[in-house]
Image (cartoon, rainbow, N blue to C red; front, side, top):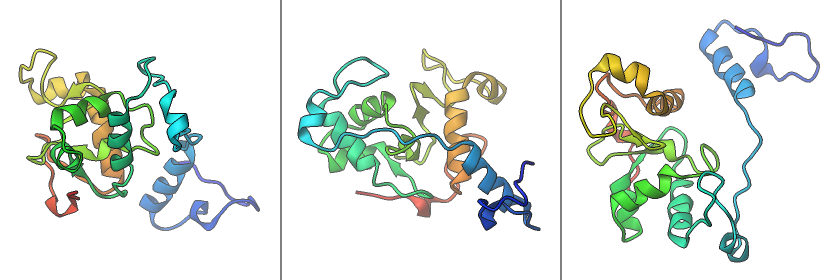
Length: 178
């Protein structure tokens, strides 16, 4: 474990503590912090803003999805269906917009969106427990092949959102409906 001691610029969060999990959390926040991603707010900026993942201009609908998703607070999740209902759209359209989200994980935390049956769902084009043809894979395959979904699970676990080994949400009271 990494810790910074005797540094006048260090906050109390980074000093040794008897609670190792607090130290690990503080250190992971420092290590994993990245510069903020520019998120266009004005209509004029949005009209010509290109998605770095796709090379295409982000659509008005995609911005609506990103705006709504950005409101999901840390420690909570919402569903593709809930976002779709709020936008008068379909869960698949919401999922397609989030699949190419260039603003992840901040300011648009798309990892906080799960399936309406409280299943982990997908992340960045992968779907937990299924190969590209939709065939169900065994759990050992998931651990090795599905690194994107596993990163979603890890991010959510750091926020206190836990799933069982089969991909189901453990605490459904952490759901936000729009």
